[in-house]
Length: 132
Image (cartoon, rainbow, N blue to C red; front, side):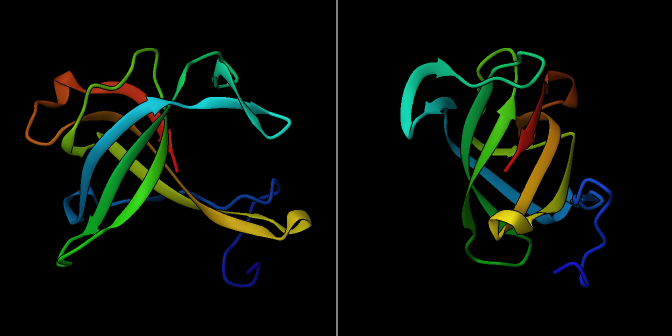
């Protein structure tokens, strides 16, 4: 994998912008992201390092030209619960690939800001951040 992707000194790649005009996002659930301890869920909501609450957004992501999409669970950072359901978009969204060779794990992360209902004004966007 290291030969395909260029990783920085923290073993993380550069972020790449997502063309939001070519990706359909359909939100169908929003719930608090919980802290787990010893493999069990606690009643404590997870937060960012700065104390911003984390939310799990379940959505179907559909690339342009495809008849169906794939489910995704997106972690979103916002002071308030996102109130978006159905077709949605972001002010900006980027993707990166992460790799943890010591744990033999790899994956993708989506990060964005300004979650809003599709067709609504950018001025009504939620200013949180997102990661998959």
